[in-house]
Image 1 (cartoon, rainbow, N blue to C red):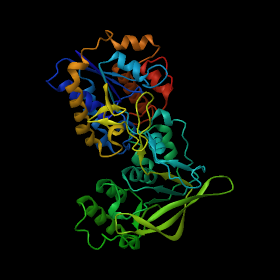
Image 2: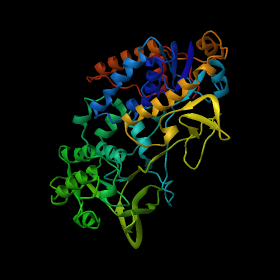
Image 3: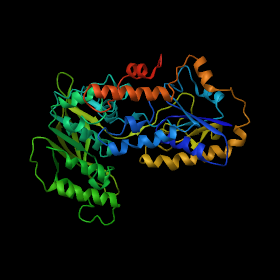
Length: 452
């Protein structure tokens, strides 16, 4: 029997586990899927917007995999922490596949980023998605009338949409009740989503973009002058299909005047250079420099500046991987060095250590991109299986984990969390509602301890 640990229960981790147990070349593979959280599914549970129920339904597919008798879920285990080092984990398993994602957002690196009211979109998403690490986050929405979102990817679109949505559309979701209440009391009337480059270079998908134009009682607008700055505006025939469709959507918004008191405005060719604050240390505006196409795919500054009022600023300019203690890390790419998923130490493959997902390739692609990525890594592991299987291991790593003072949450503990969240929703007159804090999750799961 080949015993494998997969660290991370998001799509890349689950797809890796699925590939390993369903292949036929190496019989008898058993996988433990470990996660720091007591709940599985990673960013599908804690990153997909609550109102995107079709995408969130992917949890059902991941659930089917995790219920395979050859796969065991073990939550509430922090690999790389004081009680479970990467070295110790490799003592318990023939191989370890790290699928730990990219947990840190990129910063703007401009003056004023430490002002109150300036947050990462990552933190905002975690808060409204009920991630227990974000339970203490606060966003002063009642005193915010104007918000600025910096970025032009799908996450930027998500947080823009959530700021503009009304409570009636969000109440049917699994959003934690405190976040729902805060958004219901929001004073936001204007959201500006701002990109430093042109619309043809934006990273959002057309489906996400179109949603901004379908929100009840919200007008979506684009400055026609900023569209025409884009060299592709008059001839988009050479653009990828997604960019052409995006331009078509933006053209319709450029021709429409705002008709409500709540607006979303998409701005282009503006680069943030400073965050301005008042005497109380709270952000009041974002200063942008107008940019222009350099005709080589980038932009150049023009020296012309514009201030956009904001009491809330969310930066959404990408994610970065973070080092996991005990694993090599390349700070230039914010990934673990690897060859076809095999972890490299000093340029040589480290026996029994593998990576998949964002920590392997960087924060690129969509959820489905994780499947071929995980398959490549699993293929490398299976090629190495004859050598890996010769290592002697303890009978059951779960006993060793418990002996080390750890308190894993197994699958029945997760099912107990689901039951508690359904009961919470019923008590609030809603559907299932997420428990957003560590104590609540662990109490529901039956676990007795957690050391973050």
